[in-house]
Image (cartoon, rainbow, N blue to C red; front, side):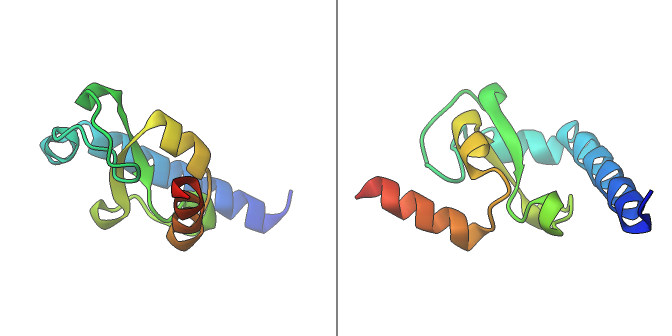
Length: 96
């Protein structure tokens, strides 16, 4: 097995575990309590918002507070592993 694959797998597992723990904190509950999706700005029930990594884990992001935002499932699914500027281009094209 490729050594970089093992390290990537260990990194992803560690960061996903950190995100899981952060989802249980008061910080996260307050963050999503507005019910507003970070990307589309639409209103949802707070329980329906997911945690998104602005800079995706698969592209070097971390599970740190500055990199985590609440977003709706539709935006999270469409964003996939895009960087913020790639996603902004997509969102701009949707508004036209």
